[in-house]
Length: 264
View: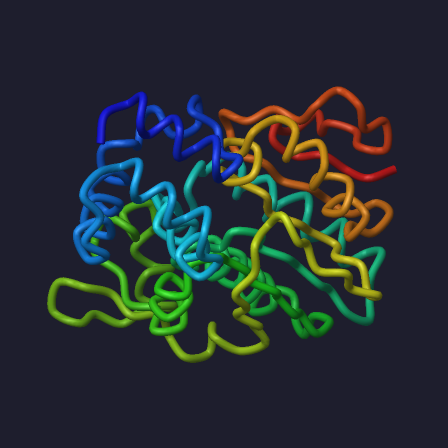
């Protein structure tokens, strides 16, 4: 599959060449295996199959998902979440806190937030109930996130004292402790169909997925629904190389970090 053929596939899936340009090598390998499994003679036949069969279309979309992450990735961001966002959320929501990890991949982001939450609870006493909705299109990612066993690269940014408290060693890998796994709902969901929750989320993580990998017209169609799920004074967090369209006056960029926005 050359780049011209790959771009044709991206167009069918409403995905962005700019987003996939740097990661296309690994994605192409997965797609090539999929083509062989279906006995497609060439890319055009593969594209015809995708267009004609919704189940093949969905499987191809799943194969396009990319997971490159580790715990507490972008340390400054997580320090601000710990020192400023969580205390602010707690001061305004004493009864219940809801967080949505949109495009949770292998779960590092979800468990990173739980680590900060439990560390604060240990230092300051009981906190309100916390519930996290973790959604991703890829069911294999979901299974691995629930299993919660990671290689050494994924935990390389975690200080040793935290590593010893929230993980246990399995030879050359690290397993998340069971007490971190509570009150998390893992769901298969496409970002183009955001959940409609009557209880708004106080934090939405939208990092390195929608704003990176989708076409601009899809972003502009989907993003309002995601923002609608955010509570007033809640926080939207995007990736360090991502930008929001300049059409959401209800979102104010934080002075503490360019990736954090608060809904006014």
